[in-house]
Image (tube, rainbow, N blue to C red):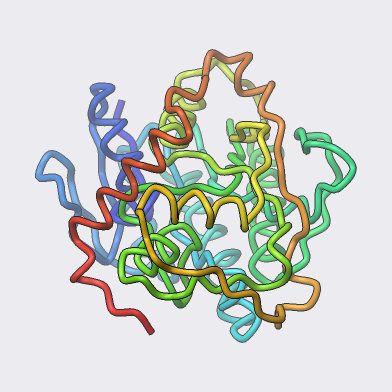
Amino acid sequence: MKVLVTGGSGFIGSHLTEALLNDGQQVRVFDRRMPSSSDVEWADGDLRWIGDCDRATRDIDTVFHLAARISVDESIGYALQYFNDNLLTTVNVMHAALKNGVRKFVYTSTCEVYGDTSTRNADETYGCNPTSPYAASKYAAERAVLAFGRTYDLQVVIMRPFNTFGERQKPFIGGAVIPSFILLAHRNKDLIIHGDGSQTRDYNYVKDVADAHVCAMKSNLEGQSILNIATGVGRSISGLAEQILQLTESKSKMKFVDDPRKGAQLKRSVGDSHKLRSLGWQSKWDYKEALSKTINWYKSGASHYQIP
């Protein structure tokens, strides 16, 4: 098949592109940045322009739509931009996909749409309660995708990955906690933890997340589906920090500060992926092994990153 990956030069998108190529698919990447692989077709442009979306989706069987703004913290100060870039661009891509006869549309959402999962591990029936502009913009885009699918009889899949980590993830401002902690630990700087450190997350290695997307593409799903990508194991942020300090043999200390994010910071976010597992997907990577692999990747290129 010929597939399109929007955001295919990004963190999850680049790993998904590799997984698709390894599966023998023809891949077109839509991204402002040139893909690292020469084995893909590159289409640059702007998803806010319907003409660029039309050009990107021509002769495509399956669309993977990953391009988005992704920071909870950043979204608090830039709510309008998040709705523009996460909701309206999704509508543009969906509109173009329908026009060009795309057969399957896979939208990468987020576990943040559930809000706090304090009562149990969230499966796909768990009520959604987005608590940040980022989460709300992704949930709004989900509803648009599902509505398009039902109205125009298009097969759509919503992927809800819980916290993803791995090589090539952005650290620090607008980025993620694991690469930030790794780079701080490498330089023996304090690891800043907002709150008391008991916040719990379900961490998934990016290559498992990419494989989950390929599984969704190849599965015979009809109509509209929602699939969690989760390990079902909750890990506290302070426990994560301690493990990174141990694996890096760092002299860094944990520094606890007040959390400025008010209700946007989730206390617990842990998922249930039994539905995806029933399709044949399973996590292939041991958590500690994947974390060590990620640490080694960042250590090898640590000089490229500036600590703010």
